Length: 291
Image (cartoon, rainbow, N blue to C red; front, side):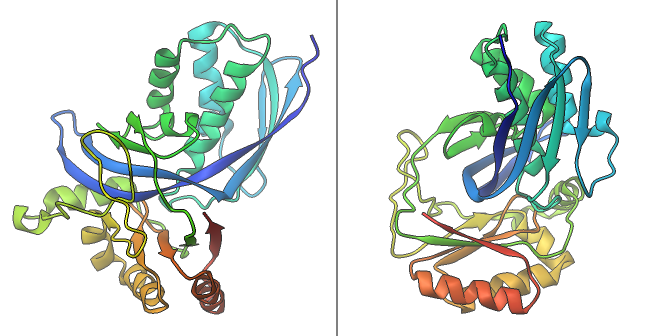
């Protein structure tokens, strides 16, 4: 059986809606969030068979291989199944780190999918694969799907849904700011209860059946993220970027994850393009995605 080199795309994700429900006794926070793929921004993995072991080359990153989620995914899959094929992985990072876009989680999920789908793999039951993915990171299971999903728990309980963004253009701004996720959760936990008011009936752009069903109005886009309450006061530049995007004509804009990226939606693609050009002029990296 010949195993050939494969080139795999690992897409970013954005949080269209994110509500922090509360803190659990084990220290983790419960969420209600709407994940959506952002395929216009992605990492590239080139996976080649090797005689034995695992090697990872990631230009521009000097992280010990054992600390990388790509290696951890390979190792944990091997421990669970006994399937430990030799791999040489070339990882081209395009998704910025510390931006709330799930780049590392996406990379790990693509390794799991590769191992699961290899013709010589024993495979794993879907529920066990999902549990393994969640052990790597709360949002890793999402990247095993191929579309948007509501996530609850710490982000690992998924309910695939439909999201109607047809005809809209998204601009994803990635300011050069790093927000520590653990810090953001800690700051949110320290907020007084009256400051934790969230959008009770937010516009979630989803036609999912079940408890989260909302009407998808294309004429406006009210997006929401609880983390903005604590992140913006600490990083006012991010608020300024969001306000600039809204002033350029976005229907809505929201920080993704714990930041620092800002996701925005436009009904007018020309306004989206002009916004991208303005961000370029301000030296703020950005990506356009047409839905």
